[in-house]
Length: 192
Image (cartoon, rainbow, N blue to C red):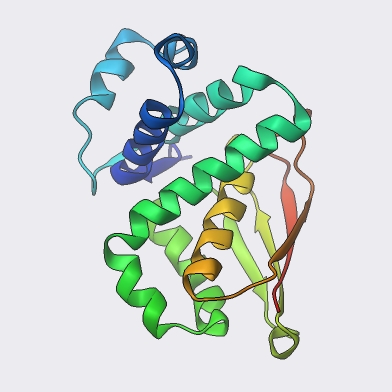
């Protein structure tokens, strides 16, 4: 089986988040589990190149370990996803979000994921309630990609806000600190 990989820009955005969000001591704590070779590689990332998913997993585990609290860590992971979305909306996604309706955005979500990850599971989207401003999604088969499902929620929240959607309500089931990458995570997303 092929090693799970992600695009370099994803790793870079995680590094940028850590640099901007945490003080120097906390950053050292987050990077401590990484080998010196991996840390050196983080300084020279190329956006379109594939890198081991473990780079992101180690960073996300480090972010969670900072507070090691179900609610606080969840909020930090949402913040990571929001940060990544804001960075993305400063580039290609900004134009795309202006043209996409929520229905088209969610319909494209599985292909966005497949473009930027390999061997990292897949999204399934249920648009049967889109006319009521509700979408259900599943992240399936992302075992080993600890905590990414919550960063994904932060990304979705930010993208919908960029589309002008208000009153967002997002729920997930499956993720917890004890189960950071279950075989299936379910999302319910609604807006006014």
